[in-house]
Image (cartoon, rainbow, N blue to C red; front, side, top):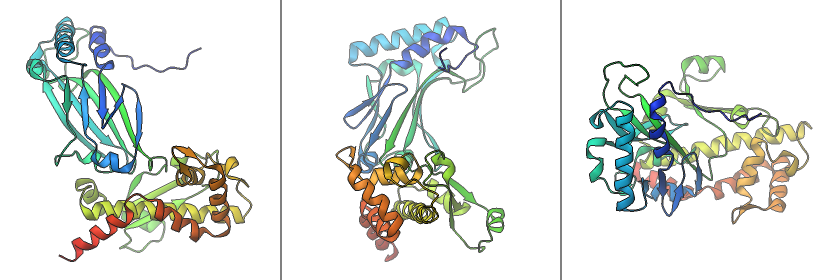
Length: 333
């Protein structure tokens, strides 16, 4: 029996719209991402490469795409001015959600087959926060509410079709989300009233433990809001990297304690699917492959000399020194 899950829509006449959106491709730098696909890039690429929506290969293909989409919308009982295409970017960790491109179907004929939406100085905030990556959703939505009719979408914002894409960085496997640090959390964990960040880690060497459950990273509510609103400022970039290092330091020392207590796998290969194992894998990656010899050495360093492995992680973090120096320059002004 197949375990595939499909979204069941109560609007049978929108299937043609969905089929057209399934063929839309996202471009990121020199790579392409098909609907439902995932791309992993370096942090530098994530922060600089342009993002584009590719609806067709050329002008002739674009004209055909527009014609077929307008026909599909008409078959669904809707007018072109009642429908728009939207590209939404979200970041699961910083809870950013922003519409970076939208186009009413009445003007779609004037749109080129490839639309660049993430280049230059106007880079979307979701592409300025590399820790956790970005999710993209390309949708055909109702631009306005319409008169109710059987088996037809009615409310503004209802989607007729959608395609989803994921862009990850090499820092995206670390499995933590940012949680607001409230007064209640401070009281529960007996923290000082002015504590800004707090990391909890448990069973970080256990390959059966889901990485997202192995660690919780709490950030002061005001700091988290500012970080989400200005993720590309010098201070925010530096803070994100320092936060990552703080979180990984907690994982490393928690792993060291678990090893000392005999509560962990003895080798990297046995523990590679754990949260600590994923971190070790990233640091031990050479030319897109994990060097298992280095990984085993790092696993033993966590056990015998965790501070040394923390320093290795710091050296591995992309642009950490530059980000720190840039933030110090800000403080000199």
